[in-house]
Image 1 (cartoon, rainbow, N blue to C red):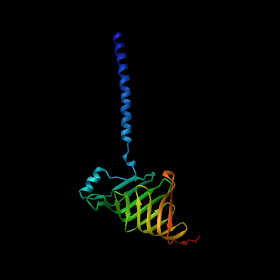
Image 2 (cartoon, helix red, strand yellow; image 1 turned 135 degrees about the vertical axis):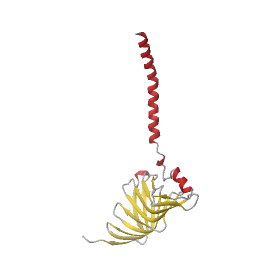
Image 3 (cartoon, rainbow, N blue to C red; image 1 turned 90 degrees about the vertical axis):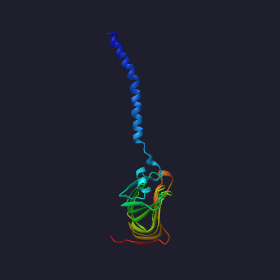
Image 4 (tube, rainbow, N blue to C red; image 1 turned 180 degrees about the vertical axis):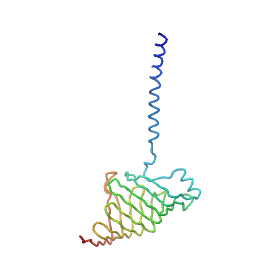
Length: 202
């Protein structure tokens, strides 16, 4: 009987040491699994994608996700991306559809045959123009367009768009932030030589 009691006491003592260690191990595993390095503003490619692009290859149907400094979420879906130079500073995307979901509630879709991803500047450039569709009812085309993947600032030139009020054209189009941080509202603005044709149809 004394032997059984001694064994029981020893087992309890071991469990007092082992169980806290196991709890720490489980917590450590949870933090490791949920650790996400993708919360930095902008985006990066995975090592496998970098290796493929550095070898001069292309990537078919890639999906690139990221977040701006203010917490806006964006995704880039292309038919193909391939490097223009070996240093990967300029990457060409074909048949690109990009989506921006701003924390203010506005969402934007940008569609283009060709776009350039400038890695160092974290810019998405549409030198040959693009179509832009906004959640508040604007659908238009621009001669050029640039989206900053770090700040979420979008600007373009020579827009022709149809919206809630009718047709609108302008030399400059912007989606900019008013206010600081994630509480700032995103505002669409048309500037320079703005012309509006009101839709009076009932």
